[in-house]
Image (cartoon, rainbow, N blue to C red; front, top):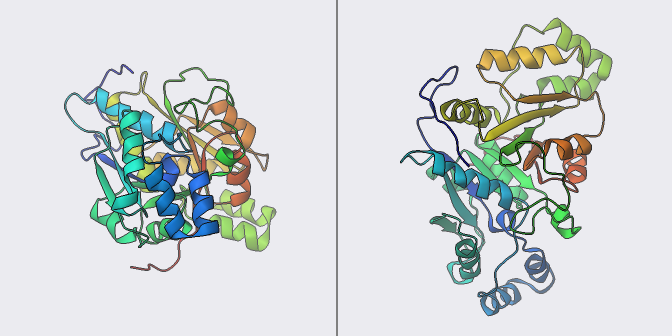
Length: 328
């Protein structure tokens, strides 16, 4: 991946601090069999299985391709680390060797880890200054969201259904026709309750589509509130600007059920934040999977399981839970 960097920055400017991404072992690797053993036979059987198979390389999981691509951005950094990935796992140190053996096998430059032997990972997310957390554990992700950290419960359905996007060292050629710019990192976001606050969506749930569209028309000039992924998008946008918009290795998309006239407030909000997305799909309630497939998303974030479960059959997807009162 060759990128021309530029010192010219607009909007959010240079991303002064590296982006820190926490990823669980189940998000990075396919641990379907191992998780089934844990659920059916308990912790002791799981630990025994992992130790007995610790020299066997794990297959890539739903987050593998994204993580590998993000780490490759450091090749563009001219001596500065842009991305750091930290393994954050419920494994014990004793059962973690298989994960690290697999990391070495795939040549992933991951050196830091948190291994908590089943305890909560939540306190360590802030300690590392985590910008994004991907995990299959709902409670860990919920705690991250509650404390202002962008996080998603990564869907493992695609791996279990054998769609193949997590296998073959992260290739998706068996599922998704590789798009123009296939070397890019392609990240897709829902709008309401993900990038933006859920106030407008709450109107839709309470009063219906007509009331929602009228509210958005009346308030079109007022920026939407920030959702759980707003800070992450802003940092991603700053990174895009630092790398240079022309031939940038990062490409973003907004994939939302909104349509006109509710689109205007979204566009004006992004403008007010001084960030942009490269592509936007205002689908008016259409199913999102085919558009995500055409975009070639390496990850899609949405707050509704109906969208993430369906999307995960074609691309990696993660559900963003609603925020509750902080647990920490």
